[in-house]
Each structure stands twice: as C-alpha cells, then as structure tokens.
Length: 322
Image (tube, rainbow, N blue to C red):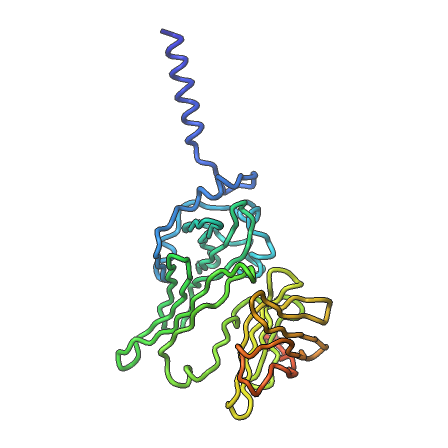
C-alpha cells in the first residue's frame, strides 16, 4: 500500500513539473520551444485596430533579455528606437507557415503601444520585422491591420469626411524571400485628388540608420529613396522619375548590393534590368545596364544624378536666462 502511495505521489509530482509554465519575465535562458509557446496561434484572416490592440495581447510578460535572445538588438532598435529595452513586451499571437513563423508582439512605452511582427525561420533564426500599428497618432483616422491567409499585412487608415464619405488608404506588405525583407505589394486609396496625384513612396517609413540611407532628389517627382537592408552591404531602394513633362516615367523598387564603400548594383533573378549606383559625398549617380524597359518608358532611361537631401535637424529650445 505504501509503495502504491509513493508511486502515485511521484507520478503526480512528475506531471506537475511537466505542466509548469516556464517564466519568460526573468533573465534566465529560455529555449525556443518555450519561447514560441508563449504566442497563441492566430486563425486567419485576422484584424487588429489601434483601439483594441492592447486588449488582444496575452497577459504573459517577456523580458527584454529573453526577447533579444531570439530577435537581435540591432533589429529591435531599428524598428522601435534606441529605448526599446525599456518597453513592456507581451505576445499577441503567432502565424505558422510551412517554412516560417510570424510572431506578433506588443511593445509599450509611456503608455503607448506598438504592434510589430517578427519573422523567424523553422530554426528560430530571425529573418525580418515590420511595424504594423502605433498608438498615439492624432490624425483623426482609425488605424488597423488586416492579415490575410498568405499572409499579407494590409495596414489601413480610415475616417469619414465632412460629407460622411469613408476615406481610406491601404498599404499591403508581404515577406519576399528574394530580398529577405517585407516589401510593398499593394497601394489603394480613395483620398482626395491631390493625394492621388502624389507619388507614393512604398519604403518612405522604413529605417534609415545606415551611412548611405536617405533621400536623393531632383524634385518631388524625380528622386531615389535608400533605406536600410538586412545588413550594411544591402540597401532597399525606390526610384521614381518623370521626364519630358511627364511623357516618360520610370519606377523601380528593389535591393541594392554594395560592391565596396561607394559602388552598388541592382540585379534580380528573372529580371533583365541591371542598374549601377555610385555614391559621392553629396550625391548618387545611377547608370542603367541591361534592359529595364519593363520599369520605364521606351524613350527614357534611369541614367541620372540625384543630390542627397539633408535631414531636417530637430529644433531645440534655448534655455532662458534667469
């Protein structure tokens, strides 16, 4: 009888140990299985608005030490700023595909939450990240993200006009294996004519911390935007030009690979278009190689020079002398 009691007690103790939930809030190492288990599976399609994103987050707290063990510090700072380590981190959910896992995560600082999706491969190695929603925008719009079954992340903002008409802008992003980054796959808006006629820069809000990142311009309709890539030898770029009073236009978005400190090139499998980039201290010189006719008019080329636009310096308030 005593032996039976001991066996039952041992079995109960073993079962309890197996069921014990691992804490992610400390500084102790956590294995990938326990980390992934903190994110509940999401059923697609799925929608989150800036008004309910906090309620949808799990109650689990993840320390920055644990989280940065799976998502690199450099990626977190690039997406969320240098003070990201002070954030409260909570899991929202995960989307698992055949080859990758998307982790939707909420970061809260100063009572304002930001929703980000991180993409990991099946070995739990970081691939890319994308900011989906931010609280605190005072622009009169309702902001939301719809996640389709692919998944594509459709980031939307909507509001009703003075005539009670729904005005909206929707931008869709999906992960691209070739560029190893999230790319814009959809732009849709019914905003006023002035906005419709504006050139939409699909990478405008992407990080621009690396040395060559920035905007190189001639005017509002002739420019190149360079943004950070997955490392310092890769940059995302978007070129738009309009020549001959708008009779000939060109537009191209892709990944620029650096050959050395001042020379880069674009070349993508299946696309005959090839472009060389040469950087000077104040400009970028573009030279088209190959056939880029799929991205421009037949009587104009990407060949041109654009001057780097200086970033606006933040205004500082002078201290008044007493």
